[in-house]
Length: 250
Image (cartoon, rainbow, N blue to C red; front, side, top):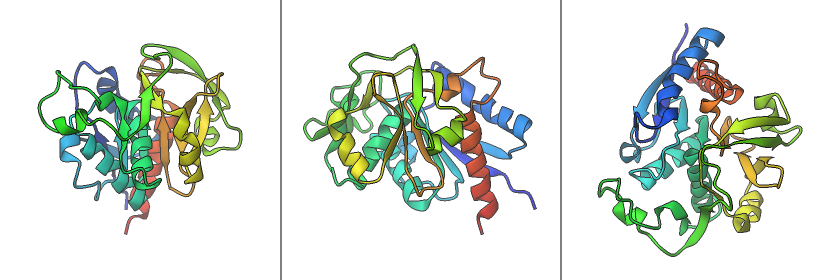
């Protein structure tokens, strides 16, 4: 019997966010090119706090600050603890680091600097999250914004990231201005997170979690590669992991 993998696209969908427009088409291309049966379901962040039970894969999307930081973090924790394949790109990467810092490293007050001020373009949901000050700034502004840039990524030889991407060096597209605080990297590493992609100056671009079926986060946006018709290897690998999870589900 053949089953279709259910993938949760966690984010606040907007037609003005290019990745939100591209991702459904890319998952269709995964079906057509690789025969992987996957079906996507959009989950707004303010509806994600109950966890990801019933899904075979979770993709934390770009487009932060989210309406509900708490919902995004809850979705990540659910996938991490339940062994559900999870991919985070751009803002998703940042929140996967944030969740790991809070719930694995014990930094209960870990925060994302993007939420430190009022967000006038959002409603009042989770406003307390967005104005929260103090605590440990685990996600901070990049020294140089990568919004709208292409840049080289060096992938650690022998890593899961190399197996996923099939290369130790690539040119990727970015659209972000925040990343992990250098001062917290050693703590994150000590608790099991691996940083296996960097720029030429050693700044983190990829994170992975050994022992998890697929816990993979990229500061770059693989969904923006090319013209949007051919899935990036990261997307294909994620869809493959979701399909295998569905096949092995009792």
